[in-house]
Structures are given as structure tokens and as C-alpha cells.
Image 1: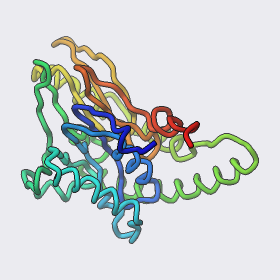
Image 2: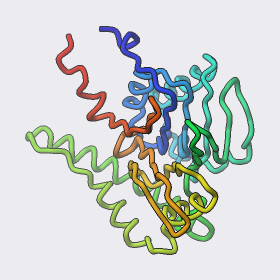
Image 3: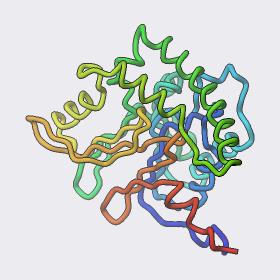
Image 4: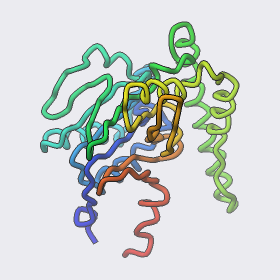
Length: 262
């Protein structure tokens, strides 16, 4: 059966934290996912291009294909919003730029079914990547890429012996995040508080590579908080169809979808 015949029609697709230009990026899987959907709107919510790591001189064919896939969607007339993140913050100099239907934005506000959606990467409210901590975050990004290479090697060996994959990189990243995290630095709390105060019904971020959909509340009111996850560890996307948001997991929803096909 042809994949083109199986394309799912969805209203909005949000992906984030792809990190093209790093070895940790699962561009081939993302390309397969993008070829499996037919969205009315595509939103890349930050860290599409990992400009911080461009000095490594790594940009393989599947990463190039990903760029062309997105540009092709724009040429076909699909509105594509590229919301900049911290790893591609240089692109913020071009905020407002349009190429076909591709638009560079710092954030987006959409009204869907009478509900206000605030869509932004999230680093703006994360003190651990701003100001004097920026050089440390950059160093961490490069170190993380090396750890990922080691992780892949270890998993190749483990799989040869019939053992499950392990995510050393995810464990280290989570440990580091838990060390630097405090109530003041927790960008989720800050973003949620601001979003509810501004009257948004949905607050949609990327940045922390943690896919989720949950209801949140403060003294000022309630909202839904969504995070599109990433294409480094979780391989996830947010999809809006039939008036509701869902999290799409590549491993569960696409990778094993056609195992029985010939």
C-alpha cells in the first residue's frame, strides 16, 4: 500500500526541538512522519536548526531532505510558521520574514473553536539558557551530542545481545535539569502564570523535550498546557483535529503501524 494513499488529514501539526545539524536528531523518522500527514497548518515551534552546533560541520542528507520537505509544504500553499527557539535564536533577526507561505515568528496567537492559543518556544522564560548562562547551555549542547553518539554505540551492542535500548543521554539531561531547576527558574510555571493572566485558553511550548497535555490552574484561572516534545528523544508532535489536541508518538503511532504489510 502506498504511503501517499494513507496520508492523514489534520488541521494543525506542531513539531519542535528537531535540532537539525546534530547527531542526536532523528530527521529520517521526522521525514517519514511529515510524509504521512496532510496538515492545514504546520508550526515548527523552535530549535528546528541547531545553529549553535553548526561548527561541527554535520548536516547529512536526511537533514537536508527535512528542510526541503518543509519548504515544499510552503510552496504547496500550506501555511508554515517557523517560531524561533534558543538554538536558532539568530533567526529572530528575521522575525516577520515570509517565503511563499513560510513565516518566521517569535510567537503565534491562534483562535481555534473560540479558544485562544498562545504558541511560543519557551526559552524566553527559562533563566538557565539566558544571559550569562548562555555559554554554559551552548557547551552543554555540544557535550550532549557527544553523549548521544556514545549512547547509540552502547545501544547497538545491547541490541545485538537481545537487550533493550537505554537512554543515557536522557538520564543525564534530566539529572542536569533537576539540578538547575528551581521555582524561580521553572519556565513552565512562569509561562503558565503569564498565559492565564493574559487570558489564553491554551499555552503551547517546546524547549524542554517533555511531551505533555495537562490542565493547569493558578489563582487567576485555568488553562491547558501543551508541549510538543522533540525529535531527539521522544519523537513526538502535537496534532489538532476534530476540535481537540492529541500527542502523536512516532514509535507507537507510526513506526509499528505497518509491520504486517508486505
